[in-house]
Image (cartoon, rainbow, N blue to C red; front, side):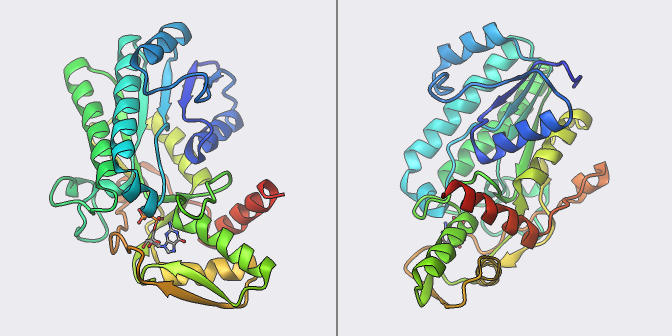
Length: 309
Ligand code: GDP
């Protein structure tokens, strides 16, 4: 990408898209094209095609998606499938039709089978059944990466796919019902501290392990890959380290400064037991995460405090 290239970031108000926009601006890209959801509904095929014909982007970051935590994925199963399939299908096809030079598709580590050898290599895709709680989302994301592969092969369209591990960072959704674990724990511990509550309730058994990548690190990786990678195979993006939910809760409690106890609510699902990504392909290309989990939680808590005022 040149500094003056026309770059469309789809989903720029979300956690991933907003980080990509900041990263592009930091690198001097001055021609970043953005549309809010009310301005352009990417589920609408003709509106999306019209937008691409008018804006004529040269590069596209496809970070628009319907996302949420374990409960949202499991509750809005139809919407997670429909919205994500529609967004991907419309953006990738429109991008191809107007001869976009390159597109990066953002997926998720939940595309991998529920019982995968760990750490998870890219080629474990489609080797077994998926985790039930987020199967619709995973199926949509698998379709997206296969669409990129198919468009590369049939049309020579330069589309690459990036599969990040669990993400968190400034501007995340701190919603207690529909958010992901890390922002939800920040809100729970903060509110317990402020209200003087004696305990905080954590979902599930606390035993599942998750790998957390700071959204600003992901944005750095994604822009890096747009510039250097053009392979058929999707790439994992993560830190290479994971932590149990119980230990994560301890860490968030420390950062927030909460001194009460935590209790587990076993009636909530655990989801997949472990999904640690093998990031050796990305490392071999020369990229590595920079932000420690503690530092990332400190930054995210600060953004929560600012947005909560
Ligand atoms: P997942 O990685 O797709 O399963 O999505 P989440 O980030 O929503 O959940 C990760 C793990 O954290 C699951 O085992 C949840 O049961 C557990 N967890 C513990 N407390 C919470 C909470 O307050 N909110 C959420 N979303 N998950 C929680």
